[in-house]
Amino acid sequence: MKFQELKLSDTLLEAISFMGYEEATPIQEKAIPAIMEHKDLIASAQTGTGKTAAFILPVLNELANDNRHETKVLVIVPTRELALQIDQQIQGFSYFTPVESIAIYGGGSGSEWDQQKRALTSGTEIIVATPGKLISHLNMGYVKFEHLRYLILDEADRMLDMGFYEDIQKIITYLPKERQTLMFSATMPPKIKQLAAKTLKNPVEISIGLSKPAEGVLQAAYLTYENQKTPLINDLITGKPEVKSVLIFSSTKKKVSDIVHGLRGHGSEIRGISSDLEQSKREEVLRDFRSKRTRVLVATDVLSRGIDIKDIDIVINYDVPGDAEDYVHRVGRTARAASSGLAITLINERDMMSFRQIEELIGYEVMKLPLPAGLGEGPKWNPRVIRRPYRGKGNFRGSDRRKKR
Ligand code: AMP
Image 1 (spheres, rainbow, N blue to C red):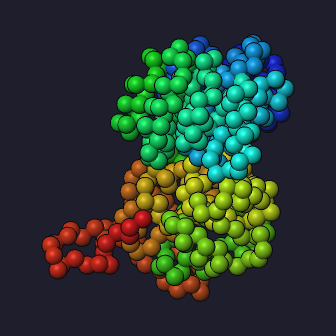
Image 2 (cartoon, rainbow, N blue to C red):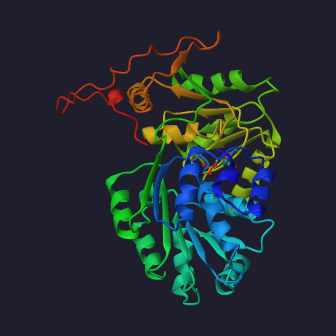
Image 3 (spheres, rainbow, N blue to C red):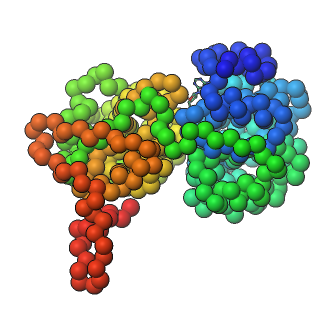
């Protein structure tokens, strides 16, 4: 469907064509009309489906008819990176309008706090905030939400996973009861349904391709012993200038630095990112990766949801993600929207069963590739071998135990 059919203003249509979007994605096609009819909404849509534009566009369309300089929209998100990214998208779409927005998140300096306070008290139209930081400001008593018209909860399932349920409830007590609430979540576990029942009024429900990696991603896996993993990655990505952007996920912060040191490359070609890095450093690393100055980025889960980096050629799961949904999110970092990409998972002998469960979730088997010559033999594919029943004290085989994440 063309954006013109969605009855958006000419100014927004101009911004959309500036962004290079040609057709609305399915979530945009369904969500934009419902939001324009002032309905509450609950949408299950993973990142990569265009869900951010699905809520920003109709909201900006409405704000364009109202010139009062007041805070009218609150977007709550789980992480700073997502807050920044949504804020950037809003700034792109609202470039030709007087609407202002700011991202409010923790980890910054005192001057950032002052800037956030100014934005919250001077009626910046759109606030994109992480729950904890917003509550710190709310506790100071100067935040004015009496003109708020939209509450948007993005990545709601991730926010609950991170323990923000109470914080979200508390923030809602500061908001007008008469408002439009939009909730986006990749998964719909019972707690999300409970939050929806409490927060939304007669919502329109939309479900978009849950739990399936974006189309266009070629998925493959290698069966490897732990000590073959880094040499394998070196083999896959070194001496290949056509591979300009590689994102590697590891299960722990410790491993991030081990992998960075084990890969061949120099200077800023290979960088690591985890929650150990200061916010300003994290932003710098992400910026360098976005601009392709850094070719290989090794990351913990911080990046797997929500973060929008275009044109990643290869995503590599150094370990099988513990949660099958996380696999889908990680793989979703490549082949965003309509482009294509490659996602590779390295499976050691202990992780085969977990990988089998992922295959069950996505509904097909991922191709297992032979290791390149020179790396030796890897383990044989046998996803059942690990699940031996526990036979009581003394009979437990330590090596059979699933790796603790
Ligand atoms: P999201 O699911 O909001 O994280 O968006 C994923 C990516 O798709 C972002 O890079 C968007 O800029 C891009 N995108 C969103 N809508 C469209 C569209 N209609 N056409 C092309 N790309 C889009």
